[in-house]
Image (cartoon, rainbow, N blue to C red; front, side, top):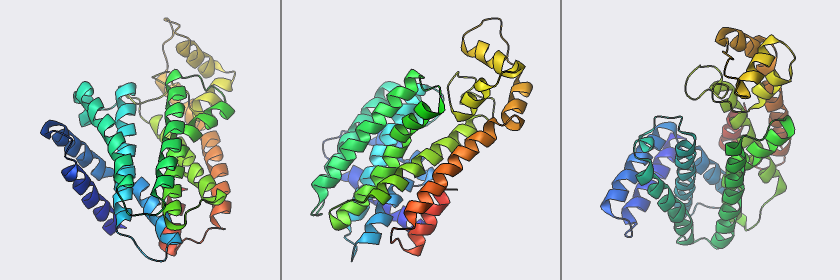
Amino acid sequence: MNGLDGRIHESLDILVENETLLGDELKLLLISFLEEKTAVGFSFGKLCFLHYEAFSDGINEDIYKVAAAIELLILSFDIIDDLQDKDSDYIWNKTPELSLNVALAMLIMASKAINETSFEHKRVAIRLLEKYALLSINGQQLDLLNICRDEESYVQMITQKSGSLTAMSCLIGEVLAKGENTKEVEEYGKYIGIIQQIKNDIQSLKEWGPKNDLLNKRYSLPIIYLLSKKNDVSISVASYYNDDIVTVLDNKATENELTNGGAIRYAITIKNVYKFKALNYLENVALNNLGREYLEKLLR
């Protein structure tokens, strides 16, 4: 799998190097942003490649270019998300105006790169990219509005925001291999994104810092559960969310309630519901052992 990371990284470098319409300043920023991405790996590109490999009789080398294109799209969304949330210290947050131009360039380059491949079904792949990218943007809009305050609406939001991008990555690989998509791949593709987002939500609450959703008055499944409780801690948190200026959160009591009052367990339970749904769909898809193991790892 490390070799696949290397091939995707190499393809990203080639995409940037061969893009003649970008000036040196933009390229240098883009390259520096990609170095940040390299540190966390290329999970979306891997999903694309593994699904292409599963349904194809042979490997068209252009699949690495497509995987790289998907990673460009994902990085552009990550950058825009961080610029909107203002809660991270990534390199792109240091020059937000310039970074936004890099993100916009990446969006265009992603579609352009797929269109320049030799795949018979590349136009279908581009339509998938456009469809799921728009769904993800809509989910991000709902997240920024902070209006999803119950389990159903919150899961719908993260399905669009996160599930769309993981589903897109799987489906593009599948469609390039055989010209069509299956419901099973779409469904477990979405569930991978839902599970990863819930895991991120839980992790956000483990440190009382700038990315903590509760301190930022953001809603997530554990917080929704906590606010549904009628006890002293939940009442205090509700007052804090409602901008009661005299409310001072007791961090220790709140953390204890999240951990021992059922909020984290509730989020983990919802995560596991989608894990088992995904595994049921995965049983009916003929992935090789390496691909299946990678997906199962993402579902944990």
